[in-house]
Length: 289
Ligand SMILES: [Zn+2]
Image (cartoon, rainbow, N blue to C red; front, side):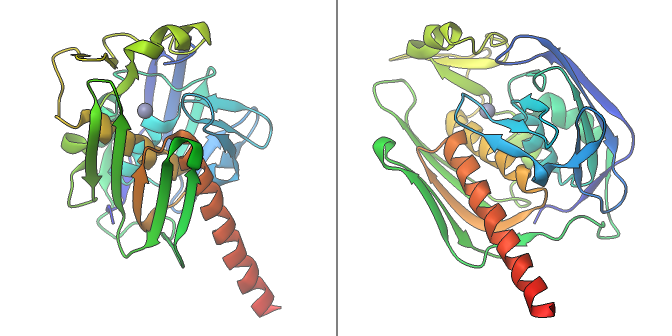
């Protein structure tokens, strides 16, 4: 399990959103010890686990209880999960979290520099253990996401983009033995050359550029500075998964296998995890009654 880190002071990120292209900003302030991950709505803060969410678009979008919505939180959330920051207040202005460099390096460098390891063990939220396996799938797409009980978080991803330069890639990430900043944070978001125009036509990817995204064609990849890892695409999918799991508001102990999955299945798994957690708590309440 990644050790907890404590944010020491306020940090601010500004920039265009990946999909809306609008100027956005987000301010992170240290949370009170043990209060968890809070997101600011119109007038107050809400626990991240109280938000509804959708992964049916190109990225993830969350909706706070007062109706406030926020697009594309996954790369910021992956950073916070990857560094072990579980007590933080997040106040976003604008419809989206800034895209910055299309991965987690820009977020991670600043957050790491402004946080310290909680050597006292930290008062982070209790990690969630999985009592039994959970599987979600999209049979039409041949996509599966399976989570199994485990003492540690282990993420394993296989992607297949036939007829493109990506082909089939597989990658694993096991924190904290695998270090987030060098191994996962630099993996950039990507799009297929064949879908870029369709994304723009749908009003998406307006903030995408060669500075923050890789474009994969049939036989070649356009990536500024070249690929950072041979399996950069699969690593980015793990980054997205780690970010979507942050919607739980607590670390997860599970071994997860993903095959051709995406934000839609990630979000469905988080929904299942939420219901497992609330069932467990309801059972406990009933036992005490
Ligand atoms: Zn992503």
